Amino acid sequence: MASHLLDQAADDAHKTRLQPLSDNIERIGRALIEVMEVQRQIHLVQPELRLRSLAAPPRERDAILLFARCMAEAIELEERGETLAAIATYEWFMGNSRSLARRAIAKAQIRRLSSASEPTR
Picture 1 (tube, rainbow, N blue to C red):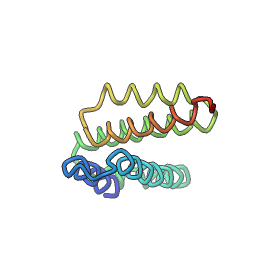
Picture 2 (cartoon, rainbow, N blue to C red; picture 1 turned 90 degrees about the vertical axis):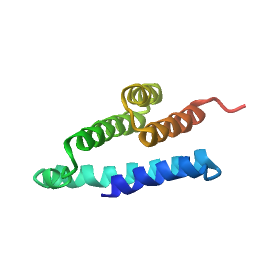
Picture 3 (tube, one colour; picture 1 turned 45 degrees about the vertical axis):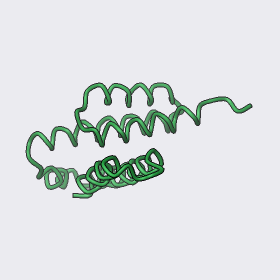
């Protein structure tokens, strides 16, 4: 449910062009990442709860799972200091997802990681 609400918020931000749009999309993405990380930790402790969280229709469930897998992988890569690999994961997702809102979140993450990995002058 939280994923759906955040996805809808990103869609609405795009439709209304809520400024600063990129910052707002990034904030939504961070919120989604936080929810997914807590959910991942819950599922590690009690894997049987994973089934309850997948009550969406099959197509939506598959899209959510793809996004969750990519986000989890990118987060792990980032935590290990593998920024370029994390960016590549988000880029792969953007090429394989039809969800504009989720692609916008991935794009915001790429931008954040890219700016963090640029050398300071």
